Length: 477
Image 1 (cartoon, rainbow, N blue to C red):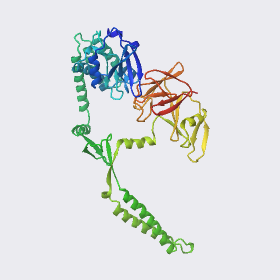
Image 2 (image 1 turned 30 degrees about the horizontal axis):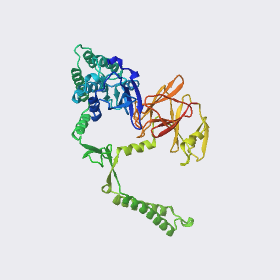
Image 3 (image 1 turned 90 degrees about the vertical axis):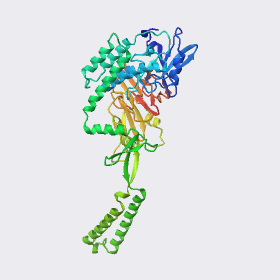
Image 4 (image 1 turned 90 degrees about the horizontal axis):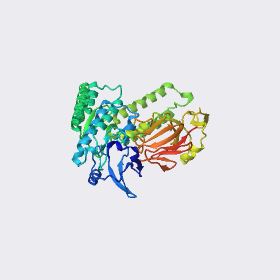
């Protein structure tokens, strides 16, 4: 099979309960190299997508696991590459091809096409489709050259990328004696030079932080309230995505303070009654002030003796817990929310169906009564849901609208553990709206049915859409 014979007609997408697959139907004239399939299946090979075979109706299919990954072509539609990402993709590509020989694989079997190269959207780690089939015969130079030109076209124009980097990369891929090994050496050299210049431009404080991080790579950094940091050995107790420490008073001291306050109040009341302070005919302001000063003095000496710094204990809190508290106050910075009154027993779906399309339901901050106000007509369709007494509304404001939890790469943030970094896309085509799952781990559902990845499904007004376990109602006024 020649390289240019492989096109999109050979591929389809499928998914099961937790996994998204890119599926290649193998032509009967081709022969699968079984030991290569077994090698990839039984080893976690960097830069190569996991693979297994299935036979249906005497036809063989190759299944590539692409869960939580994006193809490079899709990723580049909405992202401009930094210098480091540009070099990282090229380094991952060349390194993956070179290391294939360690697993008895062929460097001629990598499908180097932006449609079938997959990346981790968070760090741009690269993954290839490997073709363990015979009759492959093509030169790597041409597809690599095409890929390099595509990447250069997507470099961020504001990125401080030295001209000589692009020039040297282009010179290498256009060289008649091009080979992957020398190309990989060049990319590593450019990476080292780039990092060296970046490091030299950093402040002494930044360098010291880098040095400490490298020195304590097997430790965890804990910062106290004053910003002082210390390093402790990693243990199951403190390896919770990092910790920060906070000194607090034990519960028993807090209870003592509460009981003391109650005692002071009772004693002050008794003294005032005995002295006739509260009687109109005997009231003297100086006597009242004396009692207040006496109580204040007693409290001062009590707190100075009981609530000393030495009695505080260190409490270690996971960063995830700290961040969760922030999210509970304001979950999504780009989310339109309007508080409503609802009973916990009311099903959110029934509540959504009961809200009139032309109204917004809000709570007046000065009253417990629910106030209904007219809403402006929406120019864009939206997804809406009711959760914990709030209306969450996602306005579909672009013709290609991506939902996920990876900041700067999605149009709307859903910050839940069940949501994938790049979860799903809603697109507008000729006035109609479609939803597509983007290889998410927990899937996307339309009216309760899980949809296949990378396939578009029509959305109509009143359609229920669920991203993992988060359900919304699609409205198109």
